[in-house]
Length: 197
Length: 193
Image 1 (cartoon, chains in turn orange, brown):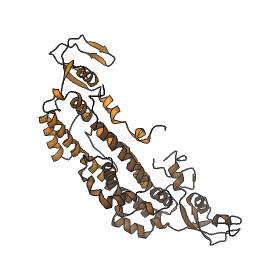
Image 2 (cartoon, rainbow over the protein chains, first blue to last red):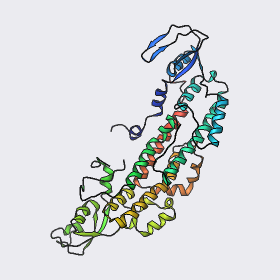
Image 3 (cartoon, each protein chain N blue to C red):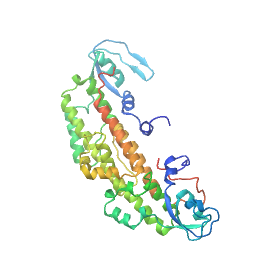
């Protein structure tokens, strides 16, 4: 209860980015190093120029020390994203991007934009995709307002869910309360109020 | 709906007044009406808070009339365009239009309660989209949601000022999460480590 209500309702974007640190990415190390054993697994050995698979947090750490290049995931390229954007604007559903696509793309573009071909184009494509998806989420809200009681939005990313979660949850709660049959107050009067939280 | 006993909003909402008429004489409680008379006579009309009217209603000491904020004039306006009604100015202190309405539904009989419950629900749903657009617009999120701009200007201002308390909380929630997400997008990981 001591947390501000915004933090009680959902995670912060920074926390989600931290969680996304466990996603595996490929790197091309620029140093030789024996395998490192961690609780989450064994990473390495690092033998340039062979690729290695490591979690995103390790990749960004090494990258910031200039000890590796990050290989951008397949979907993080101009061609793949153009295809996604075309899906996004033509089809009704959400295109199949990785669950943590916003977090991963942001980290990779922030710290390793020199490893990505044409980062500016990718940034603007990502922005377009995000906006197309946001307006679909908004459409979902409209359907919640008019007909459906349930809302199905497959392939929505974690960050996108997180952004609308507090609003959607509370709005659905209120709709639930307003649609409920009248309470029988004679049974437990006074001990019950109308709680919209 | 459980554990609402400590919900401060529910308590405030129960403080809304109902126009009641006493069906029996009540000796010694004249002070409820300002203290001019000692007893309450049968047929006295009085504004009582919901929490006080509730047990008296069930003991059949009084009857109430449908509060004017949920009357036919407001209903017609809501049917015309739910977004143009200023819910905030309909009920008194606290703006608990939905919560008060819901409380009233609970004490109405089926024939009156059902349509009124539908009015509450449809109004809320009808205003939900604009609410979210406005909230995201005011997070400074000029990014997505191109339609957000439709709600700005005078109409948008009217709408925001007319929000009910429940809607205000929703507005704040949506605004805050949009603001945080936007701030995250604009931050850079390069400097953090």
